[in-house]
Image (cartoon, rainbow, N blue to C red):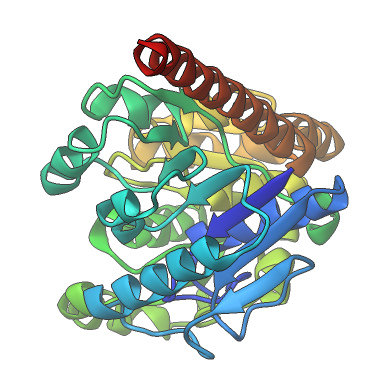
Amino acid sequence: MRIALLSTPCVSCPPQTYGGTELVVHQLAEGYVKRGHQVVLYATGDSCTSAELRYRYAQAVWPPSTLSELDHVSYAYHDIRQRKKPFDIIHSHSIPALLISKLLDDSPPIVHTIHHSRDEILSDVYQRHPTIDYIFISNRQRSLEVSLPHATVIHHGLQAERYPFQPAGQDYVAFIGRFAPYKGPLVAIEVARRAGLRLRIAGDVHDVDRAFYEQHLVPRLHTSDIEYLGPANHQQKVELLGHARATLFPISWEEPFGLVMIESMLCGTPVIAFARGSVPEIIDEGVTGYVVHDADEMLMRLDDAARLDRARIRQHAVKRFGIDRMVDEHLAYYHSLINHHRKGTQGELHALIPRIAH
């Protein structure tokens, strides 16, 4: 199969630190190439991939801008149109790719993954493109979005070998995430202190959350019971997650997925998370962690989490959220779209024959 993957120009594939979307795109590219498919990845020049890499920007463009994203996508579509051998499918992870998708005459099926929580402006965009096939990343995300006629749900997956298993946790809890109020860093700090445990915390702040970070987090991050690691790279992330007693995920918003949960589980570390967004779908209660509703319940579950079988957590995570399952489900969806597209094209040709003969 010939597959075009459209990432964003904002973050490299894989990301150096922040970038869940780009991490998933990278994992798909690697999984497809390993299966013998011909893959072209439209990303940034500083990306690292086994696929054929094409790019408009040599370096990632941050912060994101509409102009750079449109420039990136228009470059990708021009390259797609110029190729002698057409792609079997185009998989977009960039919203601007939808806006100009009609410029691709006689294009193969286009599928778009929705990575964000519901946004009314974007929901309107999706409804205006009913011929696009969509992928949601959790059932909760899909239930909150507008009804789209052509859509499926595929949970994320990751290469387990990139997350070394750690058979025992140390005497600290972990938090990784953007420093935004709805991600719950203040709750993680509170729970760790009430438990008498050290908190090792990693993350970065976006401009929109700068005031929250400076007012509420900066005074707390440089105390004796908190170790702040900054925006962790992959190696720092797996070390932090793998040796933790538990990973805290106290979100207060409808998180579409939450990659850090499965990254923790793949290391063998249980997750204790608030029951928002995809959390009840991702955590298997009493197996890979616990779903709780407030800081008090999170505190109560720390000892229970420490007693969970870490080898079983790892095994369960590989089965449910390993790269093979994710690749299998994507390829099956691609095949169904391609077959439907071909049947539709044949139907259009058959409808033309009587008119031509007449």
